[in-house]
Image 1 (cartoon, one colour):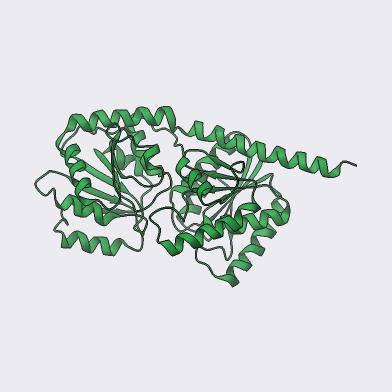
Image 2 (cartoon, rainbow, N blue to C red):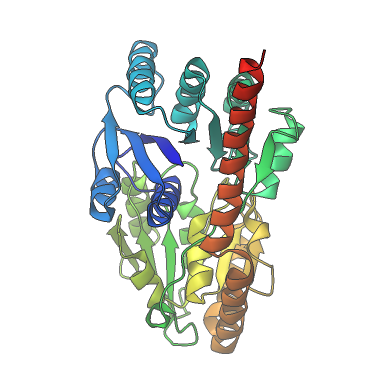
Length: 377
């Protein structure tokens, strides 16, 4: 197969970017042809180069909506995909998904859009939610399949009538395993809590900090991995809450697995989610997970077994659940081991890869059958 991946931006490496890197690397290993088309240059293209994955930087392709630039991006993307003539186009992120579907249809190429969490999910402001739902409903006819990364997102798409059930398929994210040297020791003390997330409106670092401020008498330290526009505000809140000596901002990192291996608790406090890969990374490392019960998070975290789920923005419950773990090394170990077992049985990369390849093959075969039918007398 010759697969073209399209993703909007290269200035950050988020879950969708790692998803593309993992899939592209695996396809190359299996002898398929892969190229990644992405807007601009940055940490993502540096990682593609390091992994030996061919990529092409697309001019004008950017995250913000700018009609003139978006029209130019459409033309550039159409020219490049026309020259490449891939068997299938796999689209990731909203802008790439929109433009890529239009381009693929105009060229007669089968396209698959992977929704890494819908922009009209609960927690997104109401007006934005309506606008995004309308946009996705308009774009849906221009692809042959839509992959959601959680059952929650599949049901959400059906609720908003984004596409027919036949076009939608849920494939949970999966993560490549790590060696035993990168397994955590959650029973060790004093405990370190890690949250891996960009400082953007989707994430709720403030609620986590306010919950931890209630636990000043409990030993802990917090490591915040990531960057983003809201980082200065969170740094200021840390100072105002008197937590400066216990909260460590380490920026965007490529050694997340190493950081998790030295931690005892993982937290992901959010306003909305799809199906976070960072939670799977934590479970893979053998860490208990405390996370907001939003999106498809409860499809990964089993409350009371592999960690705890807390309501969105609930500082009091979050503080209570964190204290349970911080005070009890045996509980951290038990939940961490259960999380590791759940990762191994449900969320390995091999499981995700085989399901994804099956969708790719089905789409390509359908296109071949369609061409054969059209050419028949």
